[in-house]
Image (cartoon, rainbow, N blue to C red; front, side, top):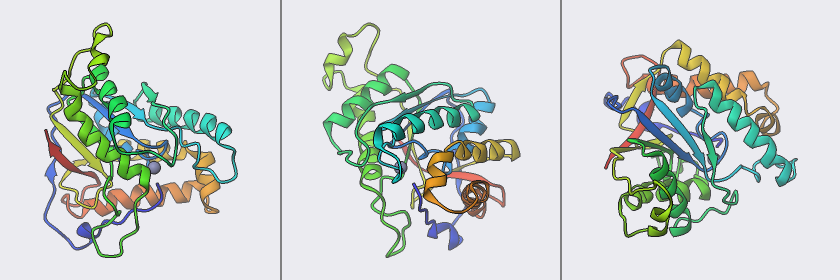
Length: 259
Ligand SMILES: [Zn+2]
């Protein structure tokens, strides 16, 4: 993920509502290693520090994400970087669904694997990343990627699937797997239509920055800029931009869908 545009915040729109805090388990489902680290990871750090449990599920290993590295090697490197990156923000469980990077398709095959993860982990909050066509809401905003669009929309759909015993019923023949209709919200990070925010303190900001820096191979291939300088401008820039609608305090904002 390389582009963000948040024109609503720049226009000084109204103050964010607070993200719900009365939950204990969250499941973050995204397309690629690094998707969460471009901003949402600071919120995850804040939550895990308060004793909440967050699990990461990645649809792919991001194997098509480094131009100068063969996919098999990139998959290995990026999985390792993602696990390190999760650990920095207090996430110890990271799963990969093994879909192919770059060619994710919205639909039953992807929904099926996401619904299975929701049934296994039984989260109250599901987190994903921008599924809209563009990063910003202004005409001509940078175009989003096909994987992000397919993944985010499939996550929103799979929440309903997970609670319905007649959809993907074969999953329920496995020991202990039950339908799960306990998801109360889906929170979409990096959306052009953010509504709710969680304030992040200095420690969570530091961890969020450190988590992006774990993707060193990816960042080094992406930019000639010094990785620390690059990561700081991305993470601090994002948090500061949301601060404008959060009483001046650094925040991660989400588009929140109650379920
Ligand atoms: Zn991505």
